[in-house]
Length: 414
Image (tube, rainbow, N blue to C red; front, side, top):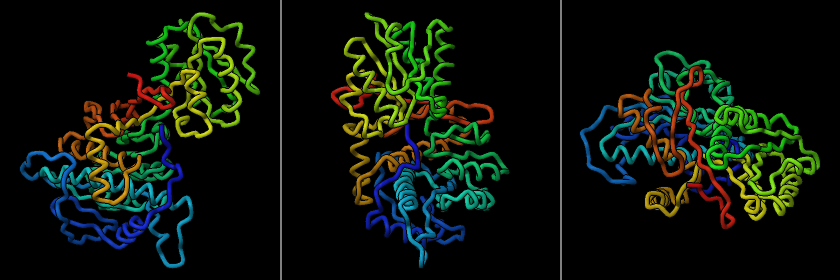
C-alpha cells in the first residue's frame, strides 16, 4: 500500500525544463492528444509517437476530453518564489504521473483514438481545487483525474455538479467514505480492503483456531484491526478466536500459555509506529525460535528501512500491496525502454501508475460505458483493478497482492 505524500527525489534538469514548458503552454486542440495547462484554447499540433504496443489502426473515434488535476505548484516558478522540499516533491510526483499518463494516451492515439488532455495545477490547496470545480473546461470534460490529495479532492468533489462524470482519485488510498460522492473512483486500494484480504487469506490457508492481534495502544491501529476482525468473524462464523492484546515494552510472556506447540501461531500487527515495532518484533522473533510463527503486517512496512528483511523473513512475514511490477516481463521492459527513450530518465512508481491509469481509463472512455468499470478487470504494468460499486462511495478498487519474504525479498504468494 502507498501514500501519495511520500517525499521524492528532487527534480532533475530536464524536469525543470518540462515544468517551465507546462507553466507557459495552454490547452492544445490537435486531433490526437492535446496537452495543456490553462483554459485558453490554442492550436498545437503534435507528432505521433511510437506506441508501447503497436496494433492495427482503426477509424478515428470521437475526441474524448480528460481533465488532469495535479499539484504542479507552478506558482513557485514565479519571480521571487521558490520550491521547498514539500512542494518540490509534489511537482516531481505530478510530472512523473503526467508523463506516464500521456504516454499511455499516445499509445491509444496511435491506434486511432482521440483525446484532448487538459492539465490543471491544484497547487495542493483546497481553495484552488474548489475553484477549479467551477471551471467550464473541467465541467464539460468526459473524465476528471484528480485532485491527488484527500483534502483537495474533498473540496473539489463537494462543488462539482452537473451531468454525472467519473472523478478519479488517482493515487491516494484514503477511504472514499469521507468524500461521499457516487461518481468517485478510488484506484489505490484503501487500507480496510488490505485488512479484509489478510483475513480471507488466513481463513483459507491456515484454518487456525486463534489469531493474535498485537496492539500498540495507538488509535491508528483500528483502521486496520477493525475491518480485519469484522471480516474474519464473518467468514469463519466466529469459529476463529481473535485475541487482541495491548503489548507494552515488547512483553509477550502473557501470550505464551495460549500458543500452540505444534501448529502455526498467527500474529497480526497493524501498527506503523517505529518504536513499538522495533521492540515488539524483536521479542516476537525470539518467540519464533521456540514456536511456529507467521506474521501479517501493515502494507506500509515495505517502505520502512528500519525493518530488516532477515528479521521479517524469520517470522514468515506477509505484507499486502496494491502494486507488484514484474520487471522481467516483456511488457514492463518495453515500457521502461520506451519511457527512457522519450523522457531520458527511468520511470518510477508514479510514472507506471500514470501509464496504467491512462490505458485503463482511455479504453474505458472509448467503450462508451465508463459507468461499467466494476465489470471490467484490468492488469497493468504495476497494478490490477478489480472495482466494486458502493453506495455513497462510488467505485473502489479492492485488489491487493499478498507478498511474503523469500531470499530477503518480498515475493508474490501465488
